[in-house]
Length: 227
Length: 227
DNA sequence: ATTCGGAAAATTTTCGAAAATCATGGTTGC
DNA sequence: GCAACCATGATTTTCGAAAATTTTCCGAAT
Image 1: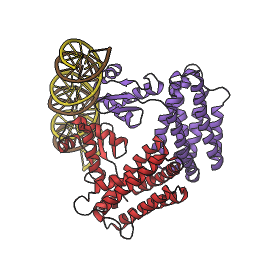
Image 2: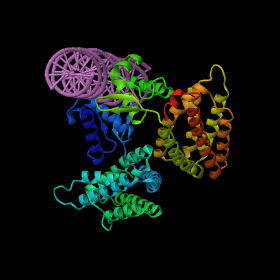
Image 3: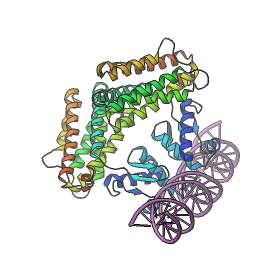
Image 4: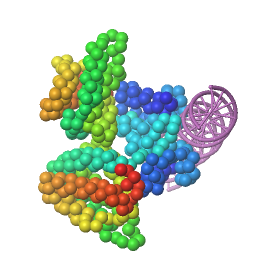
């Protein structure tokens, strides 16, 4: 793996995790020392993250961590619902056996990881499997542009979920894995209307929860500052 | 303007125009000489274009002009219709006077440029105004992510239209400016259903025309090779 | 004839310094 | 006192070469 790729992953993680705070300036000299490499790979990583809207850039004035805003979160999620529900319908209509098998296996891997406690209960592994499951649902749609935008919007919304997960843990009174199971079941039954409804509810619940947490300021002060 | 920005615009233009052919390798030494600058700004431009899917990149193996494919064109346009029709409805519902004024002025500028012949009839100016008009229609939706994706999909489809425009000129038997006028009229009348229908037809006609041209191979051999 | 290995060439990636630009603080002139 | 101005330091941007990696080519062995 090249240094530029390492820099990209490290920076991305630190931004999503909140180690690098929303709005903070990203100086080349600092980052170069922090990650132990020269300017070139850092600069390349920053440009990639800029394209993903995780950092802002101003010509000759450097980079900053992109600001958090609940408006942007709602915007991203509503677009996500539009794009993903269409992709889910297309998948259900066109998906083959390989697609269905992908759903089953990614759901299994996700539930395994969600059940772990103590060592091995790594939030990044859990997040990766959560994302993999949602991608598997849509993978039958055979639309590269759809998958591209799904990736983008996932990265954009991850920033809001991770700090809450780290500070407050999973929400009480909500069984997220049961929701995943129900979505998978309806999808594999090729019941498009039900699957789409469940997927939409799943996303809406998540946004509502994040907004509530930031209102109460009971966790994730960084997110509260996004109001 | 920085050298990296100049490199980005030059490269983008040469890729969309077809000067740099689909699939061709983009070697740093060549580009460095061609545009008269060092590796750094070239590399930065290539990374930006990679994020826009106009060039492909493979670790340690360099960059290439992204291949053209009619499947990708149809994919991009169908997503464009999904996203833009929603944005147009939102604009019509929420747009203010500034939004409406933007439509009127950008349509006027577009028609002026479309009417020009001889000197001043620059295809890049025409394209810029065409794009500005379509953006103006949607600008009332107040959704940054929507506008981001609209930009992306525009860049992706521009590659297919420009070579045809350069080789074959405007299609016979189709008054594109009249279509623009009709879309603007319905939009300003806040007749969402009509506006959405006209916009969708506008895009579908364009795709059909491009596919027909590539089938007949009567113009734009580069596009024909995309089959 | 074909495949395998390995040196040579070509290419990308990374570094460190130089150049260009922006921000800061102090000084001058009014 | 206050605004304009310039020097200074900090920061980004760019360059050119070195390092790392891939590709190409040629000869040897089967």
